[in-house]
Image 1 (cartoon, rainbow, N blue to C red):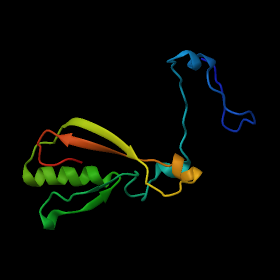
Image 2 (image 1 turned 180 degrees about the vertical axis):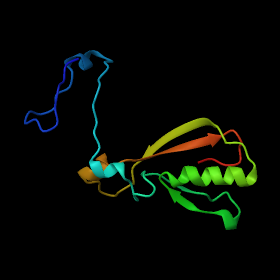
Image 3 (image 1 turned 120 degrees about the vertical axis):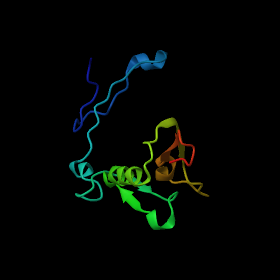
Length: 124
């Protein structure tokens, strides 16, 4: 494979000429900054969160990072429930409507995943 662009290069990134003719496969190497390895907390790495809203009031919790997994394990043990399985995942993305869009408004999108579970009690 041919590397078309390298981070730090003074040349502008290019796009494969074959792409103009139709579908073409392109491989990219993406690297996140070092701080992204940690997340919001060293004790619970990760930039994800989960509000356990479908639980009785006394069991509702906001967890983020790896704490989510520990909270789920604790809940399953306490309720003697089976670990749920995802049966479908839906991705959606949106932009906020603005009267007058700036360049930034046109390129900033917010995306999320909606997960359906086999227990059919709720979605995530």
